[in-house]
Image (cartoon, rainbow, N blue to C red):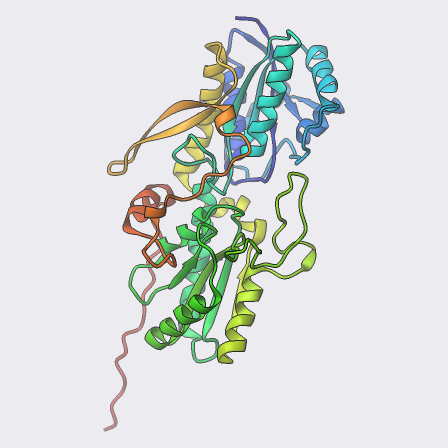
Amino acid sequence: MIKGNALIGQSGGPTSVINSSLAGVIEKAMKSALIQNIYGMNYGIEGFMQELIFDLGKQPSKVIKGLRKTPSSALGSSRHKVQEKDFPVILNVLKKFNIRYFFLIGGNDTMDTIHRVEEYCKKQKYELHGIGIPKTVDNDLFGTDHTPGFASAARSNILNVLQGGVLARDMQRVDKFVIYQTIGRDAGWLAAATAMARKSEEDAPHLIYCPEFHFNRDKFLKDVDKCIKSYGWVSIVCGEGLKYADGTAVSASTTKDKFNNTEFGAMGGASVATNLHRMIVDEFGYRGEFQITESLIMSDFARASEVDLEEAYQCGVEAVKLAEKGESGVMVSIKRLSNRPYKIAFDKVPLKEVAVSAKPMPLDYFNKEGNHVSSKFIDYMKPLAGEMPKFVRLEKIYAKKK
């Protein structure tokens, strides 16, 4: 095994626990006999090409320790899509700083970046060990049971819907419906997770719509009408990536990012929630509200999952362990061994199996109508989300005239 320096970067959106993974890499790398210095990309691969590089080994120990309890992306992130012209620049900087161990924390686009950089270096006869560390609140990475960042964002969503549901229930004489929109471009994991807020049939959320199913306006309005007749109000959760059968986005957005992904609700335009709101108002004339959190749930540390924080840290540690064994071209993955008691093991998956593609939810995680989840999903989600607060409700004991 070659001795040299290590480089760590963060890409894509932030999470409540991505810095915990960063801390895991740093602390493990500083103890490695193969890694001499540990550097950090300031603003991802984009900043690295400009030689904006932190010397993480010189950071105070209290700062490194504090990363485990700090949200967002401490190194600064980037969504730069690597072009062919970038590779010679990247290789030149790698050589300049004698970087032989290359770690990136991110989602499927990030795994694609590591894979391509590693492949280019291999062709250029430059020994570089590239290891991916999973991160995405969307939970849509192939090869891993779940992804660090998801459980905390899910918990934030669950608490939002739980508390918003109590509010909407008590305000049903004013607002007949509430719509909560969550991020999740291609997969419904975050929307589905809100089912954990529901303890009884009349609790929120009553309806959950995910990108795994084509949206049908008529069926949606029938679902809404049924719930209002049953409960007096309706709580609806929707994923931002909902599409009609012809592929048209329910958000009606046409703005794209650098990876050709639709920017739902971008530039202040329409969103799924606002369009669903309009459908209900036009059909029934009810008054209601919509709630769109966007990126707020991505780094909501006050509600972070303890399981998520610990697993994120261990993913960073495992990445260095894999590099020390000579592994390259792989991503750290999590394998679930059991739900009760909750047990996992760390594994690895080839980057080429993770890059670019998004993992949808299994269909057996949904109910037959496609507008809520199954008990199988609840079993999957429960150990990740943790315990929820228990609220009380006044019993309907009315005063009697004397």
